[in-house]
Image 1 (cartoon, rainbow, N blue to C red):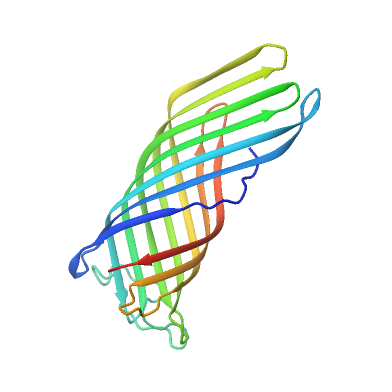
Image 2: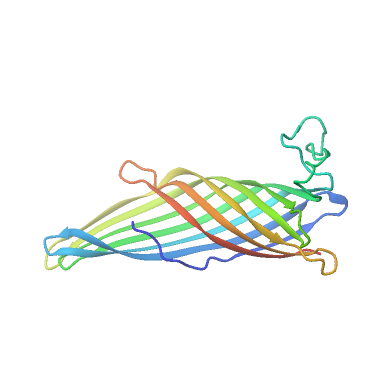
Length: 253
């Protein structure tokens, strides 16, 4: 397939935070949809053709184990995870002149469910070929958020996020070919198992005004995301790569 066009891909997240710093539970839905059109030279005897590609990915996350740590002293360059049980070593002094309190660290762990649909059609004057794909799968979802206050007068934080998942699902594929004024053929297979890892990285700036209790956050970041080995079979192989700017608004109470 060719490249996808720019598109808006929303994500909605709601949750409940337990008292006394005992963590939280969050559910999220994310829609990923895109389409693209590319030239396809030498497709048939008439010459050039056009490749049409469409994808849709519905992602549901339920993170039942989440923990937020807020420490005004900051984090050392190398975190001694085992020296302070339950605090992950966040009680060390700041590097003078470089970091200011607070440092926020949130880690989460839960489950993920995905519904993925893909279609690619090559269409020329004499020949048309189509590839269709569908997958339903579920697995683990995990990650960590870090937000470090920047040494400036404005309430700005350096934001980083690392997120991953491991999905196992059942895939179905279909293939067809039709010749103008001639024969057509098709085939495919269904319910073939496949494992799909993914990684998502973010780096940007967060603005946290005091309105009035620092319960509002606006984050602008660059996001890189890759889903590996969709359609891992003897006849086809595909990865899904997404990158672009992320704008996230949060309200906590």
